[in-house]
Length: 275
Image (cartoon, rainbow, N blue to C red; front, side):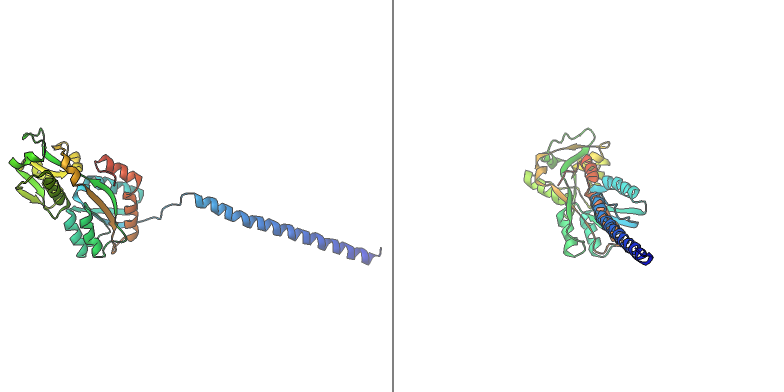
């Protein structure tokens, strides 16, 4: 074979080898490309980190939620170091009216669907409010129960504090009294459940109809008397982020936290019932 032919043959073999090498590289690239979706699929199965939230968060909440929400608010802040939670506790009806009137707030947790409806009807709630707990009534009496109150019938002859009928605890009390066929004339009508409870603590009344959770939270100062008619006046507690929330991301995160298993455990321990 001539020198020219040998050179030509070597070049041809080199070209074939080069083509084979490129094909092999192409196969390797395809395999690498196929591996990427597998990796993505694996990561998709792993829990994704929650979006970080920050800034001020204002929560309007029923007075009966004060103890548990204060504790849960601290836990929420600890999990979200950039957030500062401020609570406004009070009668749900008054809080609802404040929200409708334009008070700046991010979240509303009410003690009844009726008070939440005030906010929803004004299109001030973001999405559909969700019930996260329920609550029932008890008769709060001074320590030792000096008047020996055993049920609703015993309230007829003593001084009683009730919540105003516009307030969820007041509406529930009226339902319970009607269910028991008991008529009483309260000596005071309070604007939230803590106000009615304070009257018992101060000795200004002999009894008050409040939530079971409030009796449990104040067990060092008062006693509670259960009564069967309470089953006729159970209150659902809905929560919602607000449509004009100044801090919408944090509002959504807080609502999700309150509906979490961790928060549910704390609320149940405080005497609330699962919805």
